[in-house]
Every structure is written in structure tokens, then in C-alpha cells.
Image (tube, rainbow, N blue to C red; front, side, top):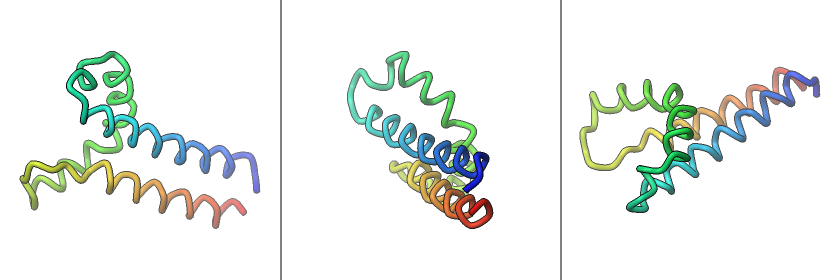
Length: 86
């Protein structure tokens, strides 16, 4: 596997974990007000924002599924990176 493919693979993996950590932090009372949450939100908002805007056209419920869909998209992109760069 080439260096670019390996870097993309790990980048998508790290982004998935950042989304998971940010989502878990939103469950705690002081989690969303912390500086770490603000930093993680700045990293993940370009990924989750477009998904969230598309989803709110069809579902305006209290549960935000955009992190889960973003992780699925990142998993798909990770597979594509494996296929293209292997």
C-alpha cells in the first residue's frame, strides 16, 4: 500500500474516533461547554454539517443521526482508499 493510501486510511480512522468522542461528550452536562468539545466540533463540523442539513429536510426529530451517517461515509471512504491504493 502506498504512503498516500495509508495516510488516508488512518486519517479516516482518526476522524471516525473524533466523531465518536464528540458524540459521547454531548451526553454529559459539562461536556458540550468544554474547550475540547469546541475543538472537536471545529474538526468534525465540515463533515457532519452537510449531512445534518440534508437530514433535517426529511427528519426534524430530537435525535441527530448525522454522526452515525458521517462514520458510515468515512468507513466507505476508507474501503475505497484500500481498493484504490492497494
